[in-house]
Amino acid sequence: MPEITADLIKQLREMTSAGVMDCKKALEESNGDLDGAVKKLGEMGIATAAKKADRVTAQGLVETYTHAGRIGAMVEVACETDFVARTDEFRDLAREIAMQVVAMNPATISEEDPVPESAGGRVDEVVLLKQAWIKDPSKDIRTLINETIGKTGENIQVKRFARFEIGE
Image 1 (cartoon, rainbow, N blue to C red):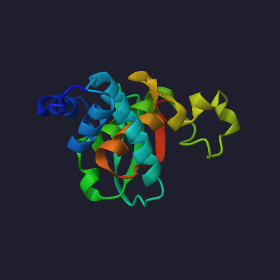
Image 2: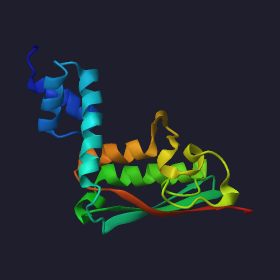
Image 3: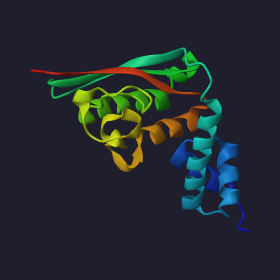
Image 4: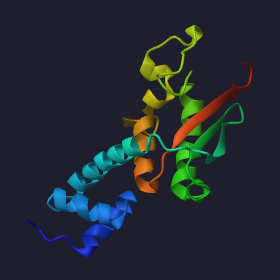
């Protein structure tokens, strides 16, 4: 087994923003392979998100995004504490979700929500959490949120959104 050095842990931490101990554990499990450790950290983030799913999300923020002054979105993204709501990771996530709403025009947040008949389309097209992320189609929005849950250590939920377009 290759030696897991502080420099290797630091490099992985800079790549992923994961905690030091999580980085060390992922590197040990992947025998020092950075790519394998990144994948392992992603899996750990999903497991962390599942454990935190029942926690109350009473804090958060409302984020807006406008594109060319013609299309805009407002999203409410919630977390457990105001401390996390002020972090760059959380603010970036809220911004990415607002941009997603502008670009992809989802009809609902999750597959449990009723989909209006006028929405049409497949579930992965009209449900926000199932949509492929516009910046990396290999990930869906749920995965993006789960990764941020893994980084912040708190439950995160999209509570609601609204999309506005000139002439609609």
